[in-house]
Amino acid sequence: MDAIGLKRKKQPDAVRRALLEAALQLGYEQGLAAVTVQAVAQRAGVTKGGLFHHFPSKEALFEGLFVDIIEQLDSEIDKIIAEDPEPYGSFTRAYIAVMLRNGEFAGDHQWAGLSAAFMADPLINQHWMVWLEGRLTRHADTDAHSTLEIVRYAVDGAWYAFAARVPDSGKIEGLTTRLVALTRTSGL
Image 1 (cartoon, rainbow, N blue to C red):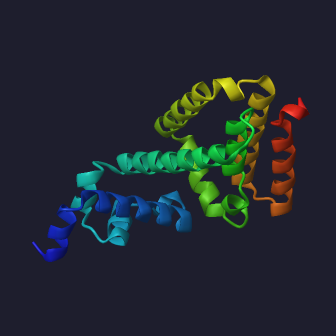
Image 2 (cartoon, rainbow, N blue to C red):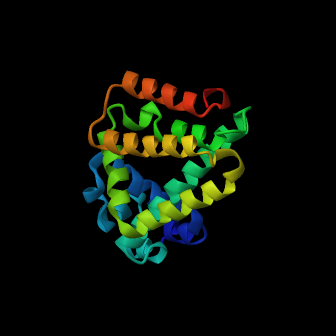
């Protein structure tokens, strides 16, 4: 076994991270169909056997990738909530900020397509629902108002619509501003 193989064996977390990053980059650049076991392994610089050591199937790789995306989303939302001086609606405002940020949509059809493809998978959709329900339970004191629920549904609808047809950034910014206004206690 070569030195690279030995080094990788001692760093399984780094190899797993490289595989997830490779899958994300391929999906982002070329769409979900390009995320093949061979392509991911090659981009990450590991063998297919190395990939299967971390992810026993292509489905497990997709699931791992989506769980990783949710963890990143969760971290971003926590950061935004921590910086929000108004507790009421803070989760919903963070949700708006993360889901409708311009960089995710403006000229970024592949990312939107990748995300939409993930949501079409029942197992991955289950992960999403568990995550969202957990967040709603966690933020029940600040984000349970029916207006905030409607705002989150509007965000989901906009996100889905933008995944299919990306509007100009001004339209996204305008919608974001209007939705955030609905999360303020003064707007109720």
